[in-house]
Length: 506
Image (cartoon, rainbow, N blue to C red; front, side, top):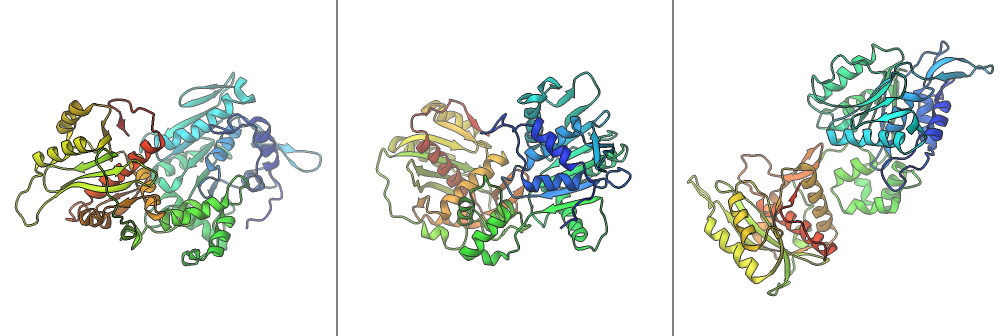
């Protein structure tokens, strides 16, 4: 634990945030902020000054589990850096430091993606539009400007070459476990710019990521551990990382699981019993990283835990005219094509209507389009097909023909290339599979494709893919099942809500 600061502007900054800042989008939009004890400690450390009034901390890393309002906290600090008492101006009669506003502040909020940067900037924008600061700022889509004097807060992309030459007074970096590859240099460029302004500093705030992938967060975490242990003497680096002291194998014991969740998630607004329940619903590495803030490698050998798929087998029959949703994925040649159905009910039943695969060998093979077409038409004749969702590449012409035949509101595109959507769909499917939220007909092809699927980690989330592009192990039926299950659950939850014709689920 970092020593308690002797001199700090932290209490004054905390009081300013609670006076002038409000919550951003959500159930408490516009409500006044009340900081937690941990947030107050972070501010006390971050705004420590030496005997000459100079800032001590120049870089910081704060690691917290999902749902710890990290992004909002970064937004409050960012707005304070624009208009709050964040720079030393002298000592009061009791020997305490007094703060003043930064002259000509240039505050940068950044994230690895435009979407994540918009979340951080949106939280900052809400602070100045929904609360008492509205009369002091002009708010635009990408920047907040102080009225009547120099100073601004801007959203910038983590794009190489886009941020060279700027001279920020403060940088807030959000979800830095996603800052990989060339984005690591972007962070370096922005931090180098901080050296051009007096007492400038940076706040990196994140949840743990994949330790196999080098990122800004991982580099700072490893350095922070050395600072924490005393191996490196660097008072200018603030390291605050919340994670439980537990071995992953111990999480199988209920008492250890509950204690680990409580240790990692002390916020009063979190329901730790709900978080503990998620342990059985999502992959172990996702649970450990998102909810315990632990650096854990994904298990890339298998998507679902051993035995889970077999336990979901059901001899359930599906009568004619049953309400179903169709999930379709495939290609014309060299791969496979699958048509999977899911009943529209609380626990959807998956059954395969067609799976066309390369028969093996080195000969050229193409998907029998006529057979696929016949299977689709047969499904629409036999069942009450609420919707057919299909991955559009390679099959646009057939999709249009099926839409012409059965209505554009019933034949829709589910673009699996939109990673965030596909990651959410895979996560929901995994949860259903591990909590008996689905059954299946035991089709061996579907079982094989599910077993072939591995998780791929991206900044937008984890989704299923082949073990490598050249692998002969196909997963099209698994993707079709994911699409069908997700859309069937949508129909079950929205029985009377129409789907707009021509919608592309992205």
